[in-house]
Image (cartoon, rainbow, N blue to C red; front, side, top):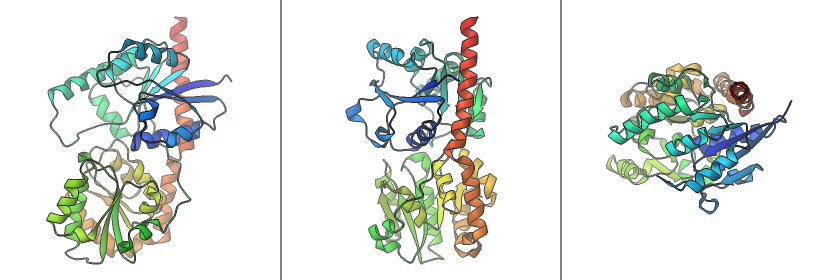
Length: 377
């Protein structure tokens, strides 16, 4: 069998779900002897913020594309690069970029990483862009991959074609070597306490404020508990102020961005991800693999889809019910029993990146075969 050549196209190696997905899937794809994988980063190499993808040992091309970039030479260069591969897997939506990729002769597989509301009114610009994206997905892409059934339904409801429209859950490579004492050494206040927590980017649709509000209600009945928030983002200042306004700042640990995020997830007794319309929810799978109970919201999109498969009773519908569920779990000794932990770990292993790699490889073969048939015609 000839080697298939696939190139992933991203904006930047930013910290977050897309970067984590790429980091995991490329490692798995490198182990497939019938697949050659590369990355095209639409950012200058010296401006790359997150360096860990640089150590993957794959070819990385850099062509900077700025917002509303009309430099034709850059797009020509991208076409030259992409034309050397059998499939271009696109992880960002840039209208001009997608238009150019469609003319490269290489089938484009668009990967959905967004879906649903983001706690803001949709502007006219956003609505027009969404309509254009749907048209381009139907006319400029050979296929679309969704990372949950929720994401697939969201885009099909917007009239994205169901043809070559796949659902492939994101894959994870689980970190089994981490410093369990790191969080407690960094923040001694965590020692000998029950810990409720989350690891998240602090942006609006992650709704970390929901968790802070719910935790303030928990404290009215349970005093010996700490809220651990590991992450950073534009809402950090407002979240700290919210904790202060509620008078609970001494009970909330803002740990900031952490390279060893698994250590902080492991320190938590209960993990909470209150996002709205999350396309998937990689962090939930990581925490389940650690045996942790994971609480999510009914409108959490892909998060709700995942947790409903393993512990549907941990899906809640409101901020009030979130605080009640947290109180219930703090008193429930069974959440730490071996059978509950084993159930969560077993479920999480279905999302091992090696399984995901096989599904993507089959998807590539479908698109390559279709493209060959079209060329013959």
